[in-house]
Picture (cartoon, rainbow, N blue to C red):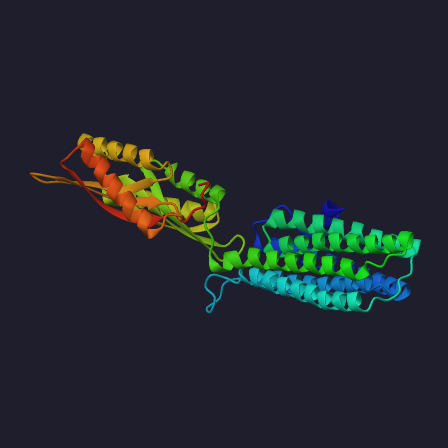
Length: 393
């Protein structure tokens, strides 16, 4: 069903990196969500009026809220695909994250309203009526919502959409909520025990938790998050794959919406190669990154001495010391300055984010101590920085 809808309504559906195609995916998901939720809202309102169940009525208005969420997602994806302009040189891609954030507040608001209603139902319980038809309609609603969750999740992964991922999570919460409502009706029908208020409380908690999780997931790219390990490896391997590049470090990626990224990286080039030659290589990498990776990449060149055996020996010694302290420690921009009585080893030390300032200072002292144990003439000049990548990079 999903593939049928995609092929019928989305032109060039395989070109998911294209902004127009991404927008078409988002609009399709929004329209399907609006239609499904409005149909479910009407059916549940009718069932709730017949049975007198507050949990069914609350579930119905939750579907109405979901329809509103789909409208927000529809508009958000449409606005996000607008090209860059004078006021927004990086485009409008982050509007998609803002739309998902709005959806999260709509979900939380529905959960809070249900919470208040459920508390009132516990204090003043009403009568319920049991019927196979209402239960059947609700069971059908569970199936529709489950399909809608899978539909949005599949499309969301295909085009890397925060809005569709949020909508999928919301739909799964609705599956749990409606299932709980069915349970309350069945319990009343079998044992004449009214747990409608309790079920309403459980449902409200599920809905609010789903809303909070959606908000958390959409805030992270807006605030700034570490580089995904797969993206990190992809960019680093791309840069290091060019002849004339000896290594790279200090990769930073700025996200301006799905498929809209800007990155900077330091590339190590041989110090004995003409700077114009190295600059030409760097220019070519930047152009190729835009074409092949879809990333605006800015590269800073760092010259490294490759033919000085003494520098290489001391570099190897320093790396061994780092690995003996913590496998996660790395370094770059290693230089040696020799004097008559001492040798200065100057380098940048990259530590994990969980290192406190005290841990960083202790690490610098221990590195210096261990290096002097190996060669008493060596003194370290260390600049500490933290990685911008996730721990698994």
